[in-house]
Image (tube, rainbow, N blue to C red; front, side):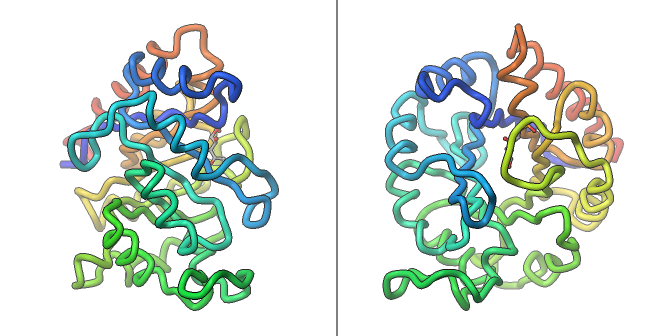
Length: 252
Ligand SMILES: O=C(CO)[C@@H](O)[C@H](O)COP(=O)(O)O
């Protein structure tokens, strides 16, 4: 059976002037995780914030008691040098460090302090490094990246080098409020067929209007920014997203 729904509102759509309160309110309204979008202005054409802000908002939400637990900080690293920031984000309170496949394999990444450069770091090595630093590891793919690049990584016999979650982007990363790309769902279908128990996250354009398609494909970790933070009743939206996913468990 596919894993249960995990609803992870993206705080990119929250009021940044009240970010700590937005985080605690959203968890109180029924969210499981908080999806924390980290953008460097290089890997994506937008910037958000770094580890110091994560440290501050972390104190507004109780830490999860186990893997995938309530209060998980799911940090989506839209950055060119994912290895460089692993230790900083672990110290800041990140629980799940989700890097982009495209950034890990891009050997044109800028120079970094010794031992921290992402250049020539394979996804497998990076996953191992994230695990060694006490976090769960996620791997994300942009819309133009084929899901075929993931089979070798997911089938790795070395458990410490296998990701705990795959994130399939359903928009081009960089901004909230974009239209959902249903064209990305065959990736989710294929992942769910091969890995019945793998947490599969979808991110971008998820709402009450698009959740049924994503849930039918087999996604169980649902990121929603504008749909949650723009709602009159965020708790009701979170509940409906959860019902759509959990209603399909056992039928996929
Ligand atoms: O990673 C991103 C954007 O790059 C997302 O997390 C968005 O923040 C989701 O926002 P909505 O599409 O749900 O408004």
